[in-house]
Image (cartoon, rainbow, N blue to C red; front, side, top):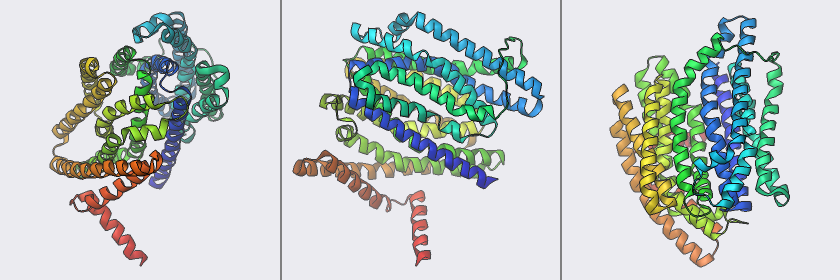
Length: 512
């Protein structure tokens, strides 16, 4: 059984990683066609408005529906279970349909809340795009319910691939229909992609042999249980959405293209974090839960320490690399078509300050999962609320002086501080899990990463100055940085590095 679980986890990880890569390609193509323009600002703002609504409702629904549905699968008759499914679908899809209608009727008022400082042109375009994207809210609700049901029945692979139809549809639209339909066509592509996501899961849903009916029973026991569980999650998500709203309001007051630049730089950082967290989610979280359920506190603490140290060893040099090569990296990935040098410079400023928080984003995810494994969601929720308050406070304070950089720096500082708070809370809950060892690893890795950064800086400067090729200069500088970091870190006496060294040497001996 463990081998089967491992294979499923590996398969899901591969599907997720490929999905993230295609999603990143989508963003690169979008940058090429629209750059940091009014069109991109409007599209990002419209997406944000819709995602605030869907993020508020659908995450809560997905989290609460699964445990109740699993109970019905195990302990209730088929007739009672079928009624519960119909009631949930009727109530929530009906509710989302109402939200969609209200959203389309009051789009102008909603946009004015999120983007009070937009120009008239940007405001009008945002309203137009938001009206189109509001249609996707109902689709997202239906997709979420279907995915939750499939997870409850042990079907993971198709739901893991749910982003593919959306990404492919958007890429095709940008490549072949931009000249005809512009950014409006891209918004329509999001809706079409949502239909594709819904259809992707339907063959498996039909295999569950359920007949949909409209059943409006407000007193249904299952609906009441879901409603009770939803309330605290809605509060937690609501705090996060307030944070998003404040960020967007502040961004709307910045020069044209600032919102797009923030979006592209943030996507670049999240892409890196996502690649690492996908592995953590599929491997370390499973093991943490296993050790806790077995009562093996020592193994739990050891795994946590090792996980944090490994992320420090990987993320810190990546963070330094982003900060040193911020402009060359942005130019290499995004600068083509409508994405000009000015767009690259704006995005690189945001990338510099988002990069400062890269370690915080990565570690926060791991530490939150440690609390989830301990069945303590309260601490993670409170910490999330503190992070939001810190982010808002930092952003409001820094934006008047630093502009786009202040907004990114506020996010990074809140991530770093909330990570420290999580580490302290975890120490209080489970005792010493190797804090001194983690501190030593952090200090040694910081020193090595700084030396690597100096080498990368001068390497890029010399190569670009002599050859004039940004691509060649970046590639050689990155390879040199990896080589330099790898050599130096081997002599720092770090436990995880030494274990890797011994593993490699033993493999070489076996082959001989």
